[in-house]
Amino acid sequence: MAINTQKLTVEAFWEQYAGQPYELVNGEIMAMPPAGYEAASIARRVAMYMGLFVDENDLGDVLAGDGGYKLDEITLRAPDASFVSKEKLAGQSDRSKYLNMPPDLAVEVVSPNDSAGEVRQKVALYLEKGVKLVWVVYPSTRIVDVYGPDGAARPFKDGDTLSGGDVLPGFTLSVTAIFPVQETGS
Image (cartoon, rainbow, N blue to C red; front, side, top):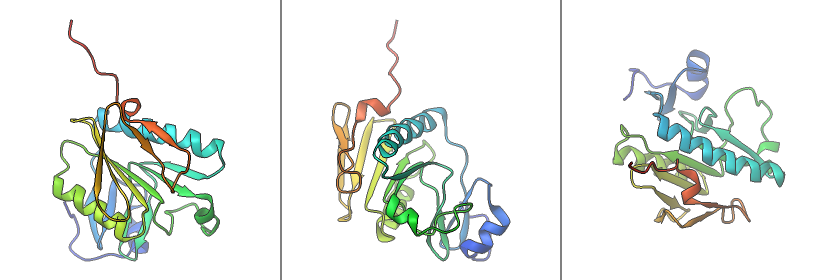
């Protein structure tokens, strides 16, 4: 839901709203309410596994959901987890603010209040702005849709293994490992 009446640039948005629970999409401020426990736990797990691999192999950095990326002059998004390569980071002079580039890999964990249309728009925007790989995690079905540059979704379910592909060569992650353990009835 947009909360402003005039379009802002990323720079103007940052001056007024840095550190607050908002993103800027096409110049409009969008409220980003806190995620629920399940979504936050999944995002943490994905970031943790990616981060360990990236750190071990000195590939760049993995950011948690608060890390912002300037996708264009009027759009600043913060995926739930993301990877940006060492090469791209080398070109970033000011690291105290958002990054002036899209991530290489963006992960979005779908919350109960996210609409299917919003998720599709976010994926399309990421791909249009140069994100090479997008993972959309659906906690309710325990499925991860993986999108590459072609925009086609490839579903992965419990028991399948995600791959970093050309973005994170050698990185694999079991879909089962990113979801909290399911409780069994007594």
